Length: 489
Image (cartoon, rainbow, N blue to C red; front, top):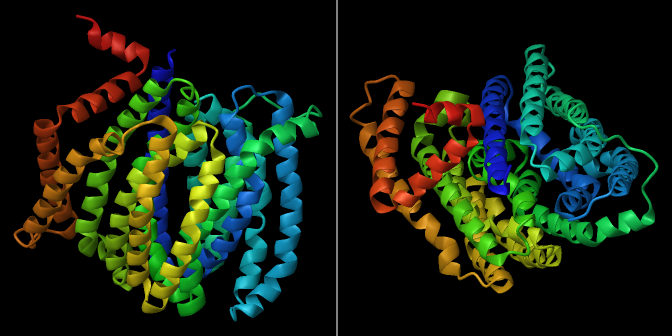
């Protein structure tokens, strides 16, 4: 099977993973949002800021190194696993010992036990990191899809059951622990590799050269992208953060389904093209076309439908999340274009550039969001969007410098989807009042269908290449037996 065929098949299973996981995740999130108050979501999200930061040191650098490395030995896998587990033991002890003082410092006593129990997720994720890297490296996204679907579903069922039994905030904590445990079990049953004693300091150093830059970049990106959660929780409390988190969660669901479906495949595919710049440039254009075609209309529809969608799905308690969601949808569109830089830089082994760009982003993000956070979730969301727009040119310039690809060629694939999505938004808004007599779900269905037809028609007129690409991707994603049957007379 060629690299192109393997990449398309990987994208297909990544889409299955993202689609199924997000469908299950949204249904579970809706159920939990109707059972638990905003404060519960805000407090767990606040704890998640600390746990997410610590998670970087457990898996981020070494795991990505396993995917990117051209020649991989069993010793590299052993070294990565044992190093991750050792880091987990040390970090877990720090969390348990430091949770109480941290909660006291932040004047939020309920934060301490939440942090203590969420620390269980760290070793579980460390166990899952190496099997996940092996599967990503081999473009075996079917087991990864099953891992996401199974883990999210079982974890979600556990969370809902705990919420119905009156466990309150612990339902959200239990959901995360069960999800991580299930994911680890599924991944280990999907690979034949088993750890031994083949690792050495040589193997670990080989991974650390690339992984250190990856981890450093991940730390900087984390600070830049999660400072909004931290400051909202610290300055305005868990309730304001909960309102923000629900808006962010809705946008993230679409992000996972759309752009990250392709981006999850980008690093292993682009890594195989790192010495062939013309093919690498063509791959970036192809990724941009597919990404823009899927992502832009999804985010625009989400923002346009938000006034009806949020109360219908989550209840009137969450109406304050509507403008947050709409602003964050704009941020997500900007990030769809910018995010392609990460896989490109990493595929070329330039984690030092990734680290440098992320480091440059941090002070600007911290200052901008620190000024915005006291004014509430909506202003904070606007600051996040502005930060992404201001920083995007730096990431595009980095790609141009490394692979001599003009910026206009990087951006060109997104132009038609952006224009067609704007028309789509106008149609959704114009149809709202004439369809007011319909049930809210029926109204949104008609709006989405009409806008979707208009979007496809406009793309077909302005850029048939986008539709041809998507048809080709879907065709190649079919099993060989189905393609043969379709060709038969």
